[in-house]
Image 1 (cartoon, protein in one colour):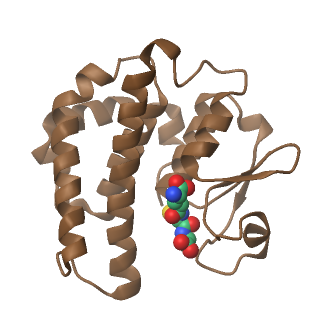
Image 2 (image 1 turned 90 degrees about the vertical axis):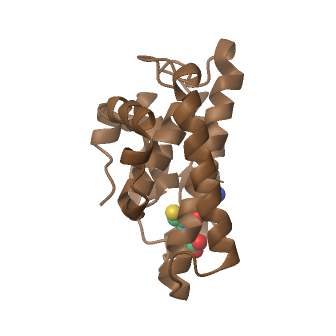
Length: 200
Ligand SMILES: N[C@@H](CCC(=O)N[C@@H](CS)C(=O)NCC(=O)O)C(=O)O
């Protein structure tokens, strides 16, 4: 298999962490690319031009991080990251993580490409509020939805989103505002799948 990725995309990092947690790194070649350039190999694999893309052994390119995560999760050898007996809790967290990623990524990109400043637009303000509400929810629910020692796709999604916030929007100062969530993030991101994939 081949995974198209870069070092700043939260979506690509999520797919890569799933690959690592499933013990699949020997079976996946990493194809570093710039999704904002006109990378011919990436565009051939995904006409939408976004990463991550996973090209399967039979040559099918799969896009969308969550779909890739589910595809990898179904492969041996690692244990399932969506255990049947905790499915709803895992999907709940996975959705919150993905929403957090989308809200923060959209703000970062609009700042970069439209030169908008924070809180410039009605849409930005909606996203700030969405981020705040989601962090507030996670601060209170993370301990009941996440079990220590048994990582899931929900944990990966939320932790990558928090890492991305710290990387790109540190002015939000989430560690101070959400201490419980910060303690959880600190524990989960000690795993080698996180330490070996830091944003840069
Ligand atoms: N919903 C997609 C989002 C993927 C995405 O937006 N990737 C960004 C990098 S973080 C990208 O490749 N952007 C290039 C572009 O939009 O042209 C997913 O979950 O995979």
